[in-house]
Image 1: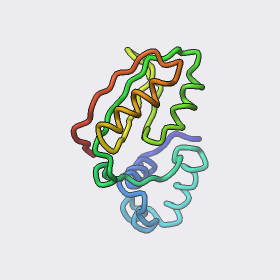
Image 2: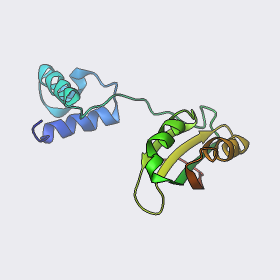
Image 3: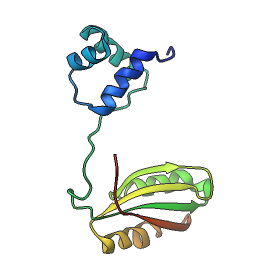
Length: 143
């Protein structure tokens, strides 16, 4: 795929702001035709630049009154198995393999502190290849 131009970036910015924006609204905002916007979004999707659409939610209003970033040190040769087992834990909202002082970072959303404790101590730490965890509580989320 060719490098993204200014219009592509503007379209992506509009979709990040509101993934439900109409094709007409996007086209008007970036000053191209509706057909041009449609063609560009299709090209960006076909090329894998756009991988999907999502909705942002308020975790507290969803009943998640305890959230934390949990970092993991793992046996690195077992990364795929650890990833698959972590994917099975529904309270893990995001997971990333990272470099630095730890190997994996998780965003965990729990109903309350007791539920968070269960997730970390019983679900996550039960995975044999995880050597250690560190939990950092989130007091407030910002967009």
